[in-house]
Length: 324
Image (cartoon, rainbow, N blue to C red; front, top):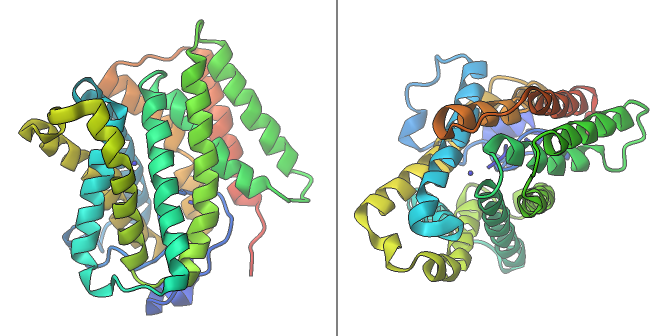
């Protein structure tokens, strides 16, 4: 649930005017889309103007991870595929309602919108399948390798290999110090990381070819449609149970709408690089959420591994070059 996080560089003038921002490959939160006014109409944004931006970012991080933790509670009834279809479906409906007046897009933008929706579906599906097999903190930490790889790709800075080695060492600590680790879960988390990297690149294209939130709304809805047959095959009639629908709606709000709203508000008031450093805390927050909500305890070497990945992502964000 996504972006977050993230990988976007917001042009300050565009943020103030509502225009299309410049999106750069910088480490931050890739599940979040890079239009500064996408969620400006949502009620959740009312009354948060006085909240410090750092607290807004942290609130978004906590919301995403609690949403992911609660999604695992749905798996017994719906399976991971069913939970993903509910999350994307409800989030898509909310966005379509709020952006119904700006859903017209040019034909040349349609392949990007559909591709973006497909990547959203694949990213969330592989991530939910991963957290069905391995602890939430481990899955999120491995998934963070995707945006980190994009941030480091093509870099010529001498310090960047240090961040790559540090992140790799952190993943080794995570997976080698936990006894028998389900490697299918690790591979699925790596698949989610690859999808996250693709998401970053496609989000830039989507920002270039669409304006407002119409493109995101259509992409999210298309992702939900792609997941619907898989979710129905996995969960069947359980998807229509009122309690399941209510839980799925809650996950969609916690994992998508609420984080998008508060983080985009924060991006109006803090530099993108500071935002990216704060978002680097997400693996640690995921581990804490897994511990508190799901009773997923982690040993000291695993916490050290998470710390290595957090340090690598924060370092890559802090020392990365600023694109014009």
